[in-house]
Length: 181
Image 1: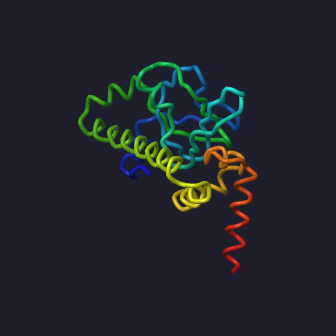
Image 2: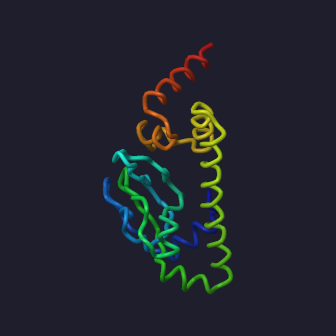
């Protein structure tokens, strides 16, 4: 989670954009020119695998940092699409503004914090996919992201966890049955 100070500075400096449900923040193979913070709404990042099945890579809700970071930093095409699941408002900073602001020590430190947060999120997800079974990944997700099940449908959460929706349903049923004991 980003600090309130960084959130406030981005809101002051950034431009507010609105993305309607099912519209894109960035499309696969387009260059991502913005980094932003979600003010309201939800988005998800996804790839298509070799069989053209959607694989959710990230879920973004209020106060999430949203960007295709590799594309943003390098100006190469994004390997994934980021699509609005609901109507969404985002405060964004363009690459040009980011580079300009990065000359200021205070902004450079804030951008480092954003970068660190993106890296930490990536490491946590990678580690959980390698070390945890499906049930533990699910339990960790709902403990860290309290509103995830209200923000996103089951099929997107299941894809994010790299399990089938039926498996997620089964895990939730087992969890409910154990709570009643």
